[in-house]
Image (cartoon, rainbow, N blue to C red; front, side, top):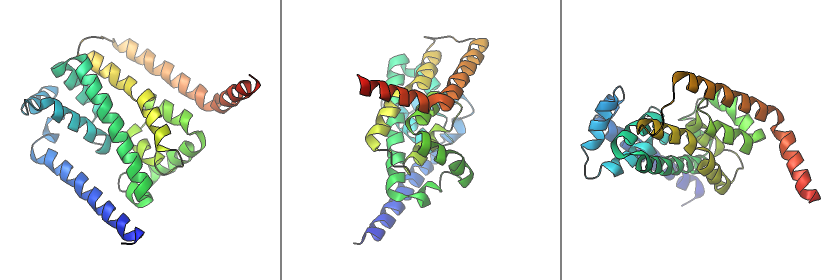
Length: 227
């Protein structure tokens, strides 16, 4: 079997699996629960004693299927399972899902990517990812202003290694999920003014890093060479 045929078969298999997963969630009524935390909690609980596994699958699909907001499902999971179980399940699912879409984009190329990412979004972010790489991806994963799941797909089109991408996901992606799980489990209560302050500080850090990230990186490397 020639490489083009292998790629075509892999592409069709991927679309079939993703489409089948979305249909399964739709057929079982999951998407009807997105408007209500109580309805989503009842949906996940209905799979007991496999509710933890179902929660993991939903969080995994939240990375691959954009309409599922992982922070909202993290809130529900933390109310059901407590802080640490929900956080660890969410972190594992989000990192795994991120690596999966990264590798799919790497193997299947732009034709696959454009099934999920519009040309407008691709044109807006792909060049920045190629130029800024680690700095941009780290900050985009860290702060909630960016379509981080779509950026994972776009990153697969660059020459960034999957191991380096995995490290970025492990380090940067859990923090927003950590806050969501902490709030949902009542381990952390953040007032509205606190959320505004966090957002402003995060935006300031992002702008400074984008403006001076290259200089800082070069200075650190130069200092390391001298040492």
